[in-house]
Image 1 (cartoon, rainbow, N blue to C red):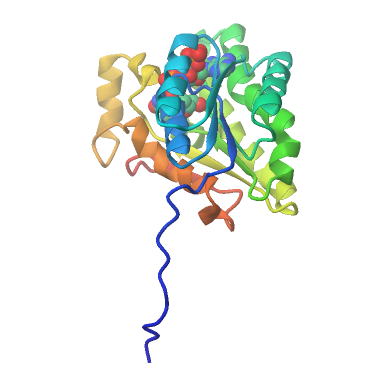
Image 2: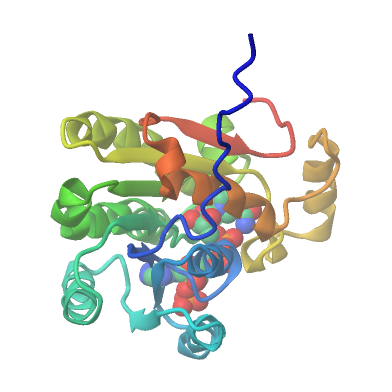
Length: 260
Ligand SMILES: NC(=O)c1ccc[n+]([C@@H]2O[C@H](COP(=O)([O-])OP(=O)(O)OC[C@H]3O[C@@H](n4cnc5c(N)ncnc54)[C@H](OP(=O)(O)O)[C@@H]3O)[C@@H](O)[C@H]2O)c1
C-alpha cells in the first residue's frame, strides 16, 4: 500500500550556503555565469580575473547588490606565485575553500604546421598548468571540506579534437585525465572531482572564430545552435551541490548532442 504520509521536503534554495567557491576566469563568459549562479545558490564567491578587472568588479557588484558575498581577486592562473597570493587573500577574507572551478582558459588557434612553440606553451600554461596551480594551492581546502568539490572545465574539443586546435584540444584532453586521477586520490576524503565538457558556447572565445567556420561547426550540432553560457551552469551547480555526492571522476558533456 502507498505510504501517503511520506513528507516531500521542498528543494533547498541555497544549496551552497556557507560555502566558499572560487571560479577562475569569472570576469566574462561561462565563468561569469557560474559565479552568478553560485551566488544565487547562497555561496560566497571569488571572482578571479587576469586582465578584465572592470568586468570582474561588475560581476562582484551584481552579487553584492543581491545581498550575497563576493570578492574580486586578480591572478594569472599560469603564475604559481600569483595563485599563492590569491589564496592568501581568499583565506584572510573568506576562509577555507569548498568549491574550486578551474574555468580560466584561452585559445591560440592555428593549423599544426603553423603553430609556434609560443602558442603551444601559452595554451598549456594557462589551461593545463593553470589548473594544476590552482588545484595544488586549494587541494588541502577541498580535501578537508565536508562536501569538497573540484570542477574542471574541459571541452568537447578535448574529447574529439578539432582542426586548428592541437594545443587547445591537448590541454582540454589532459584535463580529463587529470580530473580522473585527482578523483581517485580525493575519494578517500569524501571530496569529488569532475569535468564539464561544454560544446561550442557563445562567448568572446567563440567570437574569435571566423563566420564561415562557425557555420560549419553549427552544421554538426544536432540541436542546431551554439550553447548560451547559461546552458552550462545548471550542470556546474549540480556538481557543486550535495546532490552529486556519489559522483566523481566523470565527464559531463553539454554540447547540443555532438558525438565524440
Ligand atoms: N566558449 C566555448 O565555446 C567553450 C567551449 C568549451 C569549453 N570552453 C571553456 O570554458 C572556459 C571559459 O571559456 P569562455 O568561453 O567563457 O572564455 P572567455 O569568454 O574568453 O573568458 C575567458 C575567461 O578566462 C579568464 N582568463 C584567461 N586567461 C587567464 C589567466 N591566465 N588567468 C586567469 N584568468 C584567465 C579571462 O579573464 P580576463 O578577461 O580577466 O583575462 C576570462 O574571464 C574555458 O576554459 C574554455 O576553454 C569554452
